Length: 123
Image: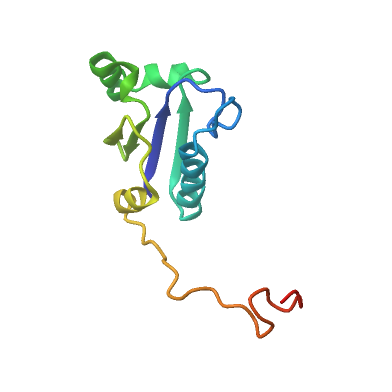
């Protein structure tokens, strides 16, 4: 099992949907982390405004903050190795770093025999 730890900038919550402008990257990233956890990996996520002691407790994070400031956040660490900083990685990158295979659909979804809307009879 791989451990993925994310150190976020100060936010009201990890989804980012509480503010006046929703950053579409945050809900996608939260869904990607849920997917990663469902694949059997341990996922830890810390927010600078809500979990400051976790930032202080990790020497790698302290060093990055001292060198680059909060611009290094979000910081992604996989098994004690920094793999990304300053941006939220894609699911493809999370999969690559954890050795998790991505299951891509092999065909397009098909409807039943009732037309494009299935058996609803609308068309």
